[in-house]
Length: 117
Image 1: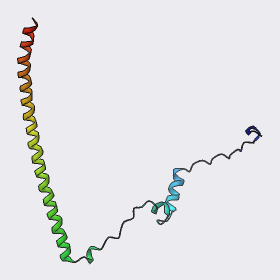
Image 2 (image 1 turned 90 degrees about the vertical axis):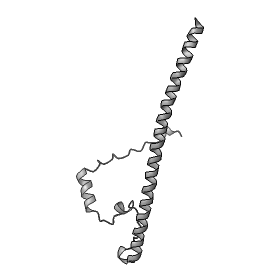
Image 3 (image 1 turned 45 degrees about the horizontal axis):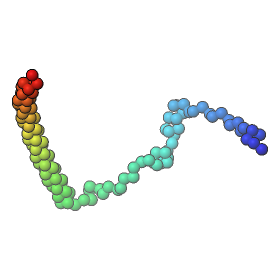
Image 4 (image 1 turned 60 degrees about the vertical axis):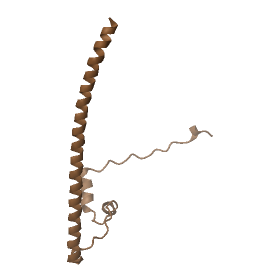
């Protein structure tokens, strides 16, 4: 028996997709605990209440955050100054290189044209 003897199964036609209004009605009617809304929600660990934190510990945390901010800001300013200095050094080196190339081409070109005559 070959494949030609098998009957093809005719599938029913697909239903029309829902309209926007039908989708919105379905979404509005779904409860907030519906898996559609909760399945992809990021799981956040419980945040300790700020009220339960000791005020001294809170001030200490703020102080340490401030110190870290100031230290980071200082490092960024130093890095900015280093980048600015290196940029100036590169500009000077570029100017010197252009001068040197100009001198070399002036020196080599007249000698080359004089020897080719």
